[in-house]
Length: 268
Length: 287
Image 1 (cartoon, rainbow over the protein chains, first blue to last red):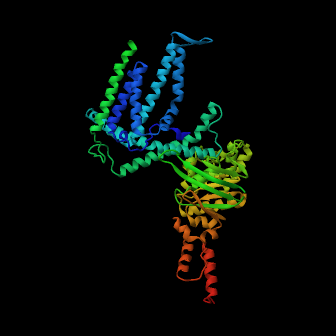
Image 2: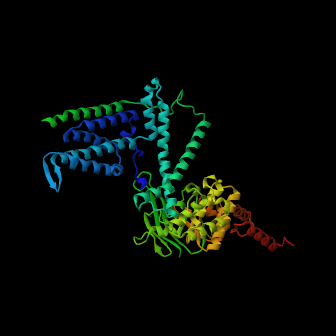
Image 3: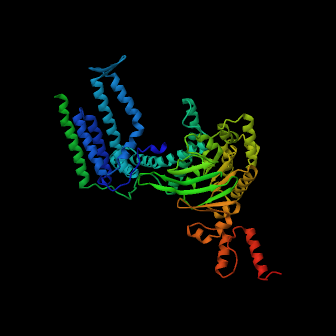
C-alpha cells in the first residue's frame, strides 16, 4: 500500500526531457500549470493537453507510471466532479428525486476532471524526470537573487534536499515497522475509525523515535565535516543551460499563446 | 512438515528499472521442531524468504504451506498464520513503542485476545527466559540499554508462543557477550518449547554452533539445506559463493591440502579437538 506512493519518485532515463536543465523544467512546468488554468474551453484545454502528451512521449516514460501517480488523488477527483455535477445551476438534463444534473454541471465537472488529471500528471512528469538533488539545486539557484534581501536560499534548499532524501528512507522504515507490528498481530486495515487511529500508535511512536535519532546522527555527521551553511560553497555539478533548453521553453510559451488564442472559441 | 515451499519466487518492483528477483524458485521442507540456521550473504534473499512464512509478502509465484495449510489460500485468515509463525525482524528494538516493558511484551499476546492472567503468566515467563529482571518490567523500554531493548523486543514475539519462531539476524550490532547470551536464550527457548526455530545469520560460526540444519541461500536460490556436517563437507563450494566457513573448518581444509589425511567436516572446536586426538592416536604419535 505504502509503496504505491509515487509522487516525487525519480524514474531514471536518458531522454531529452531528462537531460533538460532542471531550472527550465521547473519554469516550463509552471507555464504548463498556468496554461491549464488559463484554458477556458475544451479546445484550448486540448491544446494544453497536446503539450503534455508531446512532452510525455519525448520522455519515454512508461504509461503505467502516470496512471500510478493518479491513484492517490482519485478521491479528490471524484469529490470535485460530484460537487460540480450536482451543485451547478442551469438547463436540467437528468433529474433524480430532488437532485438535478445540469448541462453546465456536466460540462464543468468533465472540465475539472481533465484539468486535475493533467495538473497532477504534468507535475509528476517533472519529478519523474529530474532527480531530487538536481531539483533542489535548481530551486536554490533560482532563489539565489533573493539572498540579497537575507532570504536563506541555501538553507532552504538544503532542508528540502534532506527532506527529499529521507522520504524513501522513512517510507521503508514505516513499511518495516508496519510489518513488524503486523507480525505481532496488529490490525491496521479493519475496525472503526477510532480503532484504526489507535492502531497507528504502535507505528507512529517508533517512527518518531527513529526520525529523531536519524536527525541527530545526520546533524552530527554534518558538523563533523565542518558544514557551516552556504557561504563560499561551490557545486560539484554546475547546472548549464543550452540551446535545447531555450527551444523547450519557447515551445511551452508558444503552446501557452495557442491556448490563449483558442480561448476565443468560448465567446463565439 | 512444518514449513513447505513450492517453487517460491518473489520479484521486487516488477515492471520498473529497479526490478529484482529476490527469491527464485525455492523448494523447501522444514520438519517440526528443527532448529534451522539460514545463511547467505547480503542480498541473497534470506530476509525476503522468511517474510513469506508468515504472510507479510505475497509470493510472485509459488506456494507456502505452514502445518500443511496453504497460507495464501483465500479461506485462510492471515492473522492466525501470524500468531502461528512469529517473526522477529532485524533490529527489532526499533519496533518498541509502549510506556513500560511489560506492556510492550504484552502487545502481541493481547492482540491474540488472551485473558489478563494468561498474558501476565506468558510475559513473566518469557521475560525470565530472556533474562529481563522483574524490576525492569515497569520501566520505560526507551531507558534500557541496546542489548536489553533487543531482548525485550524478542520477548514480545516469543510471548505469543508461536509454533514457528523466526529471527532475522537477532544479534546484529551486539558485542560478543550479548551475542552469546541471545544465542543461548534462543537455544533454551527451542529446547523448552519444542517449537520450530529459524535463525537468519551471516556468521557461519554462530550458525555452526547451534543449528540442527542449515539452509544456505545464494542469489535468491536455495544452495543447500542439510545438516552442518553435510554443509561443511562442501567448504570449498561455500567459500566459492562468498561465504566464510568457520575458522576451524578452514584449518582442517588447509591441513588436508598439506597432504594430511584428515576429515574436513569439522565445524566446532570440541569436535576439532576430538578429531585431532583421533588422528594423532592413529598415527601413533600419542602415548
